[in-house]
Image 1: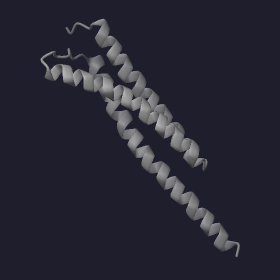
Image 2 (image 1 turned 90 degrees about the vertical axis):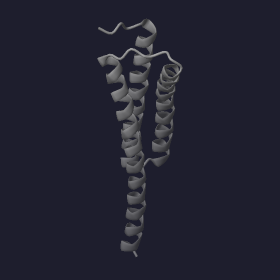
Image 3 (image 1 turned 30 degrees about the horizontal axis):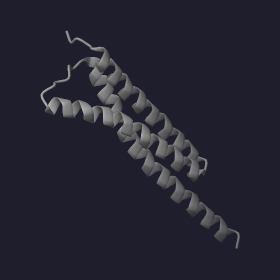
Image 4 (image 1 turned 180 degrees about the vertical axis):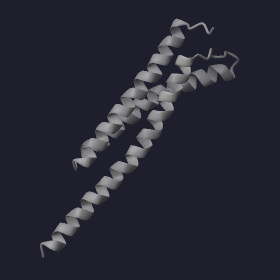
Amino acid sequence: MVEMTEELEEIIFTIVGQAGECRGLAYEALGAAEAGNFEEAAAKLKEAESAIHKAHYVQTDLIQKEAAGEPTPISMVFVHAQDHLMTAISEKELIKKLVKMNEVMFKMNERLEKLENK
């Protein structure tokens, strides 16, 4: 059985919390983009990026400690936190592309409407 220290619990909850914050903000950005509010979408993506950087910083610190000879005890909760982090990163990157696609579609629709109204 893996012994969970208070420090490791805090690290795990930081990773899960910040990854969740990132995902939530990314989906808010997508919703804003689908409504045509691209400034809000950009702001939400910027906030999502900040949240994921906090989680990634904590993860990088663990990697550096392990490289220095201080291994991290692995538990299912720790693996779960890593899964949340990677999922949040992947979803954020995909949503960034979807926001751009929505913006292109909105611009194309505007141009089409102008052409149709001539």
